Length: 461
Image 1 (cartoon, one colour):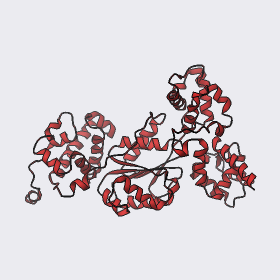
Image 2 (tube, one colour; image 1 turned 180 degrees about the vertical axis):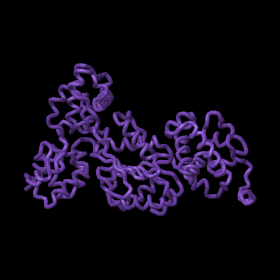
Image 3 (cartoon, one colour; image 1 turned 90 degrees about the vertical axis):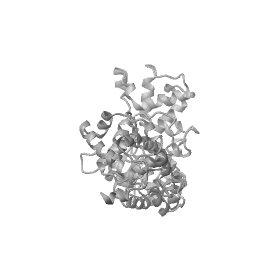
Image 4 (cartoon, one colour; image 1 turned 135 degrees about the horizontal axis):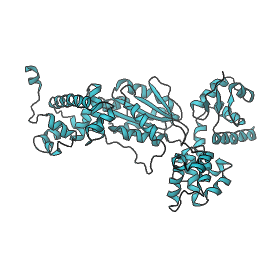
């Protein structure tokens, strides 16, 4: 006890249960408890309340304490029952673990000596998550599942996979928002040099040095989330992710990419298209309200024409249109933008060639997503010449095909490896098969694009 007393820094404010709970925004413990002296001076010497929260988020509490702290900090001023439900524990267990956590926090704060560098090094990052302009539709179950996954101590790298425009970026932002805490969103879509990734990360974090060591120094002992968006064109930079995760135990990384990173510890999630209610179900049971694809079309159409509404006269046409768009969010949005000029029934007559139908340039999207061709050009340009040739030749298949059938139309030496590479690039789907050979299929819009490129190749040769 004497040695502990000697270690105590010379402070006048001593943290106890009620002041710790006031710091954590518990309703029964008003903020004024820490808004008066000597608490204000103590807090100011350590960089302010945000710096203290950052310090606690980076403190090596046991996992049980860490989980409670994360839930409390991400949802302040809630009640015990809500916290217990979020943690999937009983209220009695919650109160027991909370009491231990409060004691541990009080001890950590009471033995925290202010240093000259505290404000500079402990000050938290202001999260730079983009503010979405529209509601999230049809992916709440995925958000819930993936947020819980990323909350686990053993999950530190998650890659959201899928073709361009499927909704990976929007999903990553919502997951980060639900997780709470420090986070930095980094758009890599304009970067093509893997060696520059660390510089971009450092700039977004505000690091003094645009180097690996500078980023490591800045993030040491911090619980932090990096969101790396559009990683597919700089895949060699995955070695940087391995390096950072290896030396920063509190760091987590959320990646969006059309290609998996294929590194140890990576968790993958393929973002699926939006669900579409069957037309017969729509006609018979009025289930269109449960179709996220239709809901997205209506939302985006109403942004163009506020007088537009879903009704019994147009719901069947909209549902069929969403089916032609294969539930692909970008395709649905590009179709909905044309409500200014065409009715849903008229759109059906224009959408036989989907690439032409979805070719109206719109400044509402990023440059590489302003038309479906632009989006597919982006993906196509990332392929090797052999992969491009294989993709184009596979457009001969209107439905599923096997490896043996692919060999009949393709001259690639290793057709199996080629097919797998296209699956990895989110351009080819692999379907479950009861037979010995796996079955593959090109999504309809991608097949149309591949056929166009094949015709171009034939004209050139």
